[in-house]
Image (cartoon, rainbow, N blue to C red; front, side):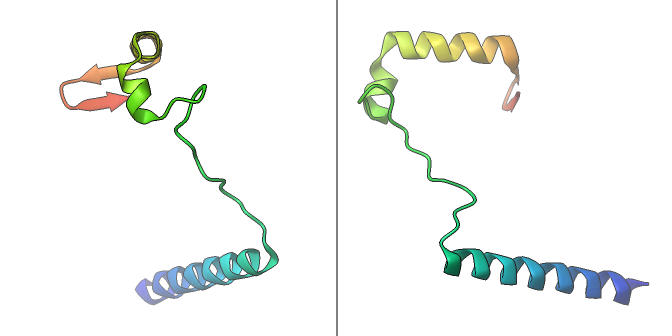
Length: 73
């Protein structure tokens, strides 16, 4: 039974690797790049912006649970 799981894992890895290679060669992008820029401000500017901090705190307090060192959204 362990041999079947190992074979399945190797097959899944190979299919994923082959699929990624084919997508890269054809120029298809599945996950786009993320840019941390809002209204022309970079991350340093956003850290200093009071309105942005207030909006982030409001969203986190409404949709996330903060427990000591854990953040669950």
